[in-house]
Image (cartoon, rainbow, N blue to C red; front, side, top):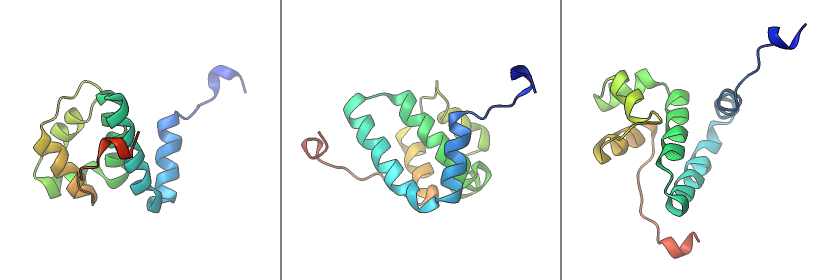
Length: 108
């Protein structure tokens, strides 16, 4: 088989498969993602991680629970997304998590 004919999986696909097989690890992953966001302030990385977890949880399911359309959820969590706080809070809640403050010096 030539290199061109191979279908390589992306890092996101491998990560999603891992979390589908190990859903108990999503919480610690999200904790780490938010800690990194607090340090680096990289919104694109945060949204990318939330988008991946949303796909694992099922965007259609999240849309039903949040009363936010699939398209709006996907757009909000896209690399160029600029979601409202209420949208992120609703999506997190539908995924089974909440936004909880944590003192910055405890993370750094």
